[in-house]
Amino acid sequence: MSRKQQLHRPGPQPGPPADDTGCGVLHVDMDAFFVSVELLERPELRGHPVVVGGAGGRGVVAAASYEARKFGVHSAMPMSRARRLCPQAVVLPPRHDRYAEVSAGVREIFESITPVVEPLALDEAFLDVSGALKRLGRSAEIGRMIRRQVAEQQGITCSVGVASTKFVAKLASTRCKPDGLLVVPADGVVGFLHPLPVAALWGVGERTEQILTRLGLHTVGDLAATPLDTLRREVGEAAGEHLHNLAWGRDERSVVSSVRDKSIGAEETFDVDIADAVTIRRELLRLSDRVGARLRGSGQAGRTIAVKLRRDDFTTITRARTLREPTDLAREIYATACALYAASGLEYTPLRLVGVRVENLVPADSTTRQMALGEPETGWREAEQAMDLAARRFGAGAVRPAALVRPDGERQAYYGKEGARDG
Image (cartoon, rainbow, N blue to C red; front, side, top):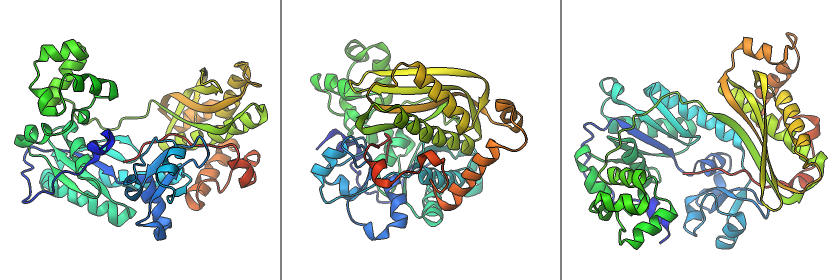
């Protein structure tokens, strides 16, 4: 069994309801989120292996249905390998704007229950429901309520872990996937943790797992029984103490609400290396358009524009420029990205990946937005807002810059896939 399969293997189904006293932390994780959203419009594919991701030679799996996972397919896997493992899988292109729309609906459900919501990605979040217990009942009942509302309002399923700490709640949601709920009682944390593989601990990557395995430490219980000095010597002072605390269920971190993104960006890996500057600038326009829409959708603007350029030999160059005032306009993001690309000296160099990112984010109030370009009362802002409205009503790509209107066959000849996670 692979490391990934070990971490996602469901635990035994609970009998009588577990005691959720003192368990005010929930981790809610959508099940195969991207695939689940796609199946809302493709119900005939339910029960079949489905993969979301780039279909080209350099495409990457963004999400895999549980039917596909039985063949060993998982997120972040090269699509070429996924096709070899499961040739009968249906491959669907990703639609990130649609996933963001469903994610926003799920977030509204969370915030109707508690203001203390810490999103980790589009498809998962921590909730501290301690303040909602008198109003809504016990933590486990709140977890069941969330699962019910997500299913009724969004048509997808989620798994919920209920525990006294963030670390244990996240492990619990993983162990009850898909479409489950698992409570880890406050006095049962050690019994829950110790049979798990050491790879279940946060901070244990493949290299650390190899070190621990060499020491004969295969389970969390093995690690917990190891002297702290030994762990510090083998994996380092900080890491050793961190793993020792987690092995005994100690996690002092609280749920932090309203965490804003430090940056918003998008990138694309091409199926074939591209040396044509016109094509690269067209891709910068597409990515700038996407980033601008995400900024406006999140109510943020940013002062620093960055581009990421990866050569065919995998060396990566980043260039950034800080503007005088923050912006959320694709027009200004694109102009800056093109200037950075021109200044990089790579206009005639084959590239396999390009990316656009906006950093130094601030809340985008109307005053900030007017200052960004010193534009008149009507103009580019209204045009981009109209595009946002059309995208929400008719789907991503309903309205786009003329330079991005290309025959599908021509587009797919060089576009690959953005990386993403999935639960």
